[in-house]
Image (cartoon, rainbow, N blue to C red; front, side, top):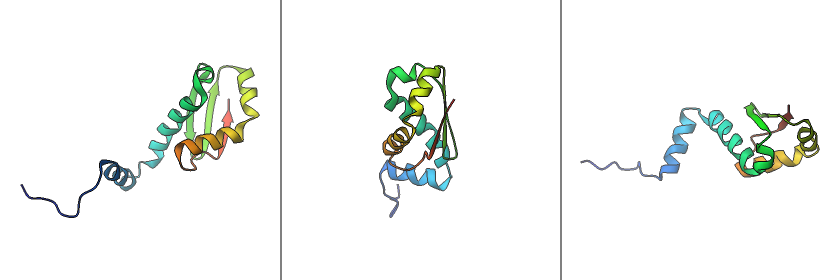
Length: 98
């Protein structure tokens, strides 16, 4: 079997190149943001979270508790900062709680 020269790289590098080449970053960001929300908010908030949707740079979070929605609205900027820090890039610029 012939050895390929110059095409060596780690699996993560190859996957990252594949994602960039096929313009899949937006879809991956949607998945990553939803997972980051679940990790950061914990069970207390996740029990009342019905939907997490990323459209562009705006994150829409649907909550089933008006009281929780009001409480979280006071810390929107902190939540945005925590999510972007978790994702290691600026994905979310605005948070809309519904």
